[in-house]
View 1 (cartoon, rainbow, N blue to C red):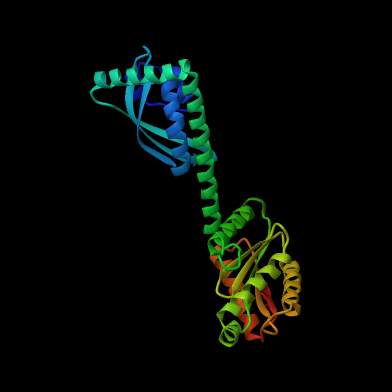
View 2: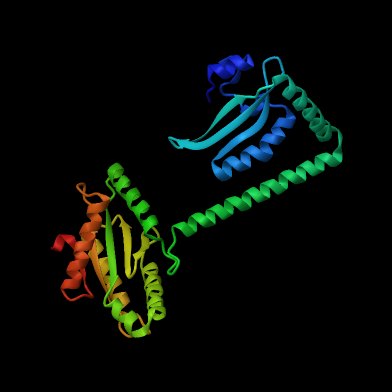
Length: 303
């Protein structure tokens, strides 16, 4: 995409020679192999590569040795890799060594079928390991936004999702409502039945919440006995109706500890709100539900 004058002066190229050309176009076959087996896996896994030895062909076809540092990032939705190239000292000695290594690798690659098969097998193994590492990273990312006990999204995921919904409101004015749900007298459950049974109550409530939401809704555990829901395209009136259905589902469910009920606080996003203010409104509504006898819903607009 771009190259600076220092590199052009060293290599003897003009901007027209390199810009919009693939970086590998100035590599030999041997260096392409090195690049594929080291650079791509590490840049995808770590987001950066440090002090990788690489040799590039200048305009005359001579191999120029460099130390390469790479960094991957996104800019305006486009993935970009910045490469910083530092020319190696003792240029003649390095050129002799690299030419010898290149010749040996190219001879092995082009002239020996067995070497080719081994290299291809090596590539396949590297790709497999790279995919395994990417899958592992994906699993780790999922774990980082998942509540271990209930399997719901955690507070970190909720905060990111709330920011997304607010941004969407700013673009297309899509309304959404927010519930904060708290189990009534949960401390009594733990004190009477013990924390293992209390954990089962939390897991059961998570299952009820998940079974009573739409695919576009988001359910998360804030912590303790508090849960939160984000419901897109739901105005104040509809959010109250849906919350009442949810409250009744919890009240009518079968519990090992006897009756379990929840109190719900609701807030619907307005242009004057922020992430902090809508959370505060829902929390105030939840407080009102508890003050007025629990096992009820309250929308902030009703206060």
